[in-house]
Image 1 (cartoon, rainbow, N blue to C red):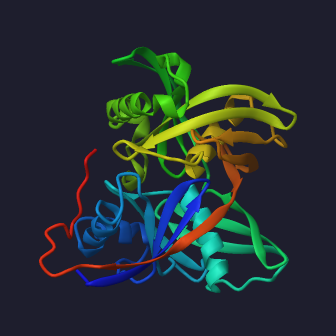
Image 2: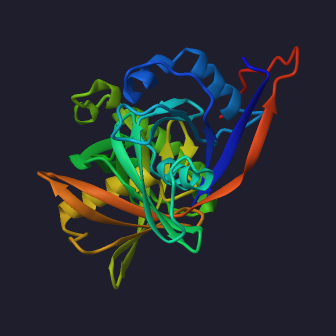
Length: 329
């Protein structure tokens, strides 16, 4: 473990994203790099930076990597307290803003700058909107997303529920919070975490969650939502995504929002040309739409904003017994 490492910390709609551009990873593609990172030096660096005392149980971040080919600006390995994820919309937005802010991708003072990023689930884009030299918004264009299976009946500790499985770069289970007697508000966070974890692990091995590329298989998170009706432009919902093993997304969740777009488009609740207004458990907001279609799949676009928090320099003191960090969750 290196004694010093510098990170650039951002947040997107309240969800942290810790960017590290100096960690060595191995593989011909980002998907391969993710597999090779598990259990190796990048995994130990993930624990060092993500877990307490240098991070916390809801920390999130990414290691910047080379792209798969010249068609992308760079790649990224997304990570959280339990490992490496296959997709991350809020992280993609943060990386787009970071790439422009640091000059990694050149930008004009006004207009839109395209940042193309290879992630484990495919190639995504961040369209960074600029006015007078400032970033005013980021549009995350996701991989093709689709409904995997509807109305899966599941017995839980809070009764029988019906759950949908959707793919939006990762597999999500989704259900109304009201179906288990909860509301997406901070006061219900502990209960939302408990049921979110329960549903994730109950459906993790479900046949519909097993994809052709096994590296993408398994349920990544559970999305619980409140239906808030409609705005003039389309449906309005509030959600919380409980991902990995009990992490709570403070933002409306980028890839989770993309998954909700796929589901709402399939049910007809989100028509082409309409926008989903998607709020988080802390009141921050994304807007999302169907940008294109590929057969039965949709290409979602999610609009939000990312902000720089600061630069951190971490040191490992001689004899520190907590180099690998710890978790209380």
